[in-house]
Length: 238
Image (tube, helix red, strand yellow):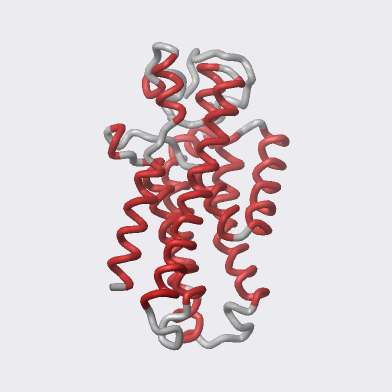
């Protein structure tokens, strides 16, 4: 029953992730975002193709859906656990924390591979930020700071995204240890029991983020990656 409830909530979160402001705004402007600029249904490509206003709208909605999809998992799971499960064997807060982590992954995957839009979505950076904000605001702000420092220094949004994606599971693990959810010096069994159900979906999210930026990584290494520009120019952006 507990797993079935989690799966239902994950499916709902996945379809929240299917909402694609980049695709819808481009269609309203008579364009196909998958055929313009980099072909990515995310805020950076919207900035290049449709301009700053559309990019801000896209960014806000993409962050919000990650945030709401994750919170939905927590509060729905908490309410259900309180009503249906024995608190000794299934503490509501612990169950809700685990379910929300997997719902965060689901909304993130729904953004990247949206069934509604033929599995053609964005790269998931803004939605991942929304998931992190809902999961741990402190960790989200640290990762956002790392992202901004790298983007400001290099003008490569993709590089900032990849670095933030690599470090955020480890920063969150540190946060869990500081909060006492994972006791310092915990045995492997305690770590697996308490941490893995929460950390595994976040590590999956990090791996997928890096994978979605693999072409950007290649272009950075070859000196071919385009830098961030506020010009509305689809040009030869990759």
